[in-house]
Image 1: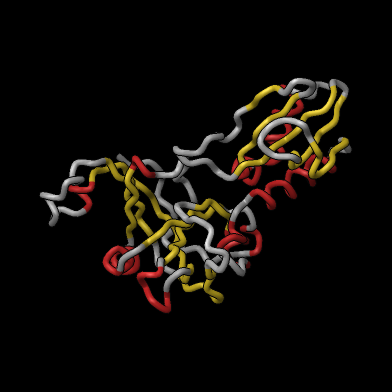
Image 2: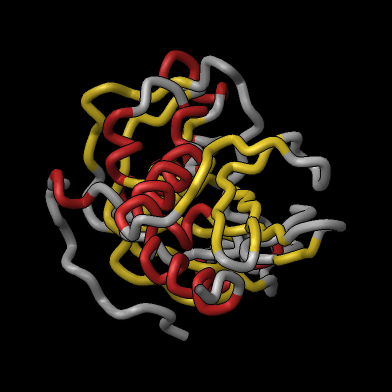
Length: 245
């Protein structure tokens, strides 16, 4: 089953692509890396897949198994389309594999491009999948710089300020799992504390966009990727549902 339309096989990065979504995935052996580079596809087991697959580009984090080329991101490629299939259909020469009938996403890729500056994992944060932006991928000095929360907060803050609304960053709160909300938005009906989360995976405790109410004022979890894709739309929803002026 095809899950996305065909895209152009190659699109050179452009400064206007600051919010273009990129999925960073892990590759830990030479054979899978060679398939991605030479056969132009990458597979993800559905049971371990991120909550969102759709992205314009795939970047590969190579583990320590690659020696001097490992523990860093060296290259990325455009995602042309993706399909839902089985491992056996992707790798027909391994029909007896114990996961042959398991469901997989197959991402079809364009030509790989080398990063001008490979991105190392100096801080050694646990890596599974990361959603980031093309701008962040091309400018990051460390894999930890790819996480989206800070960028999403800046974009939503700018959208709020452009509308002339009252907003504060790093607002102290007495509830939730963080001592400070990313943003506090003020309106005629009180304060709304906004917590911005990295795109969530199936085993995360908090999903994107899950709202809850605190003992004295409202609070809301927002997905960083949702904000990066459409900050104005997220703000419209906040105004309509929580801050009717």
